[in-house]
Length: 423
Ligand SMILES: Cc1cc2nc3c(=O)[nH]c(=O)nc-3n(C[C@H](O)[C@H](O)[C@H](O)COP(=O)(O)OP(=O)(O)OC[C@H]3O[C@@H](n4cnc5c(N)ncnc54)[C@H](O)[C@@H]3O)c2cc1C
Image (cartoon, helix red, strand yellow):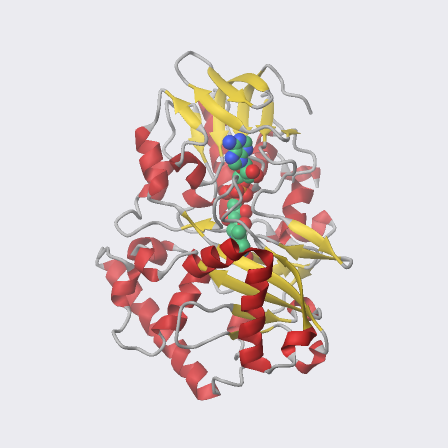
């Protein structure tokens, strides 16, 4: 699609939030264009093909599945909903950790979560790490899990924000890939790809956007880019919006990275099981064995460990994964494993990370981020989803919210959402 000269609403970014916003606007008497920097849609929802299956580079789990608005869209999209319980809800298959130790670890984590909930009820704000029990042998493991959950260590995570996340404990997957689902849902959306937006001039009665493919004018704009791009001013507002930039700075993207590997003799391991590399440090990966029963292992690494592994490149990253799996499962793993691909979201110029966390003292900045500017610039994305931040469905819901706000700003009754009946 070529770039129109002018539309009613421009949506910046064709990830889950941008595509949801466009679908929500699809039945209205308004002209809409979605401008996407990459050469594909989906953003951090991205499935790559491998041996006839799909591998998720970004989101993989439909979290809080009983409240997740994407769950009812899976089967009507011609895709397969997989309800196998996630590996983190089963006992780990781990030679190093006894069943009693695993129970002890779960109890320690539950007690930590309880302290978080109690502190949040009192409105107590501080780094979540301050509620870890000093000297507890499981603190390293908990921080490794924080790396996976938040993309950051508990020291960098706000108690109030962490507590605000709504996990209903029900998690499904899309067999063909979560990225495939988002891509399928976005197929009919009018997207201009390879079209980074560099600047939004808000000095006049219409908004003027400068892109790598020319200029476009709009009455309203929905911005769905990751917070780091706003904080770094890769996308600039003119006149500037220091309050927005500040809020984005305090809700940065953490990093989580995956290493997809194949393994021979996979039947030796229980399907859909999980183990962690080490017990005594946060600098360790989680390993999902035989996801969907496939002869594969998906390694997952968070926070500064993930940044370091990305910096080492595909080979160095893979060597770390192999060393951990050899330590856990024996030296023959060295020849049984083969690398497929490691994700590099931190180095990706259109994300700079995986998902957002609010820094201690800044839980309120998600709300600040989504405050409309002049009732014509609306922000949406996983970072503005106060209860479902960091998720694809949170981004989706926020895209729909921003679409409603933009419609109302342009004088239309947002009413019930159009867009879903096209399935
Ligand atoms: C490794 C990993 C694992 C994850 N696991 C899960 C999971 O299991 N479950 C889950 O629900 N979520 C998961 N997530 C998070 C989920 O993928 C994201 O929260 C969600 O996809 C974000 O959607 P979004 O629309 O907010 O942002 P994005 O998907 O980042 O979309 C923003 C779009 O804007 C584009 N863009 C950026 N700058 C510009 C510009 N200047 N001009 C034009 N376009 C621009 C980008 O290219 C992108 O396409 C995971 C993410 C990662 C990285």
